Length: 31
View 1 (cartoon, one colour):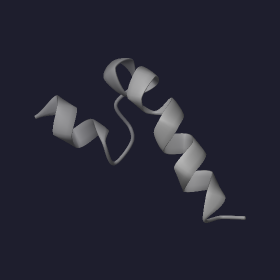
View 2 (cartoon, helix red, strand yellow):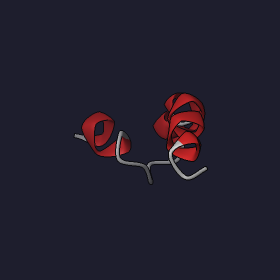
View 3 (spheres, one colour):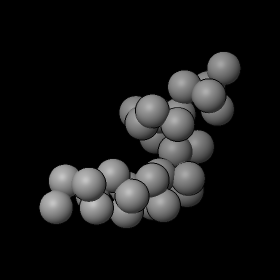
View 4 (cartoon, helix red, strand yellow):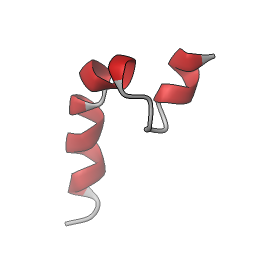
């Protein structure tokens, strides 16, 4: 089940990722 969570989080991260900034993908956008 943990393997499936990361996949769903990544899909929802893109949107909040720009506003929030606490995911592994965020660092790339913050830079």
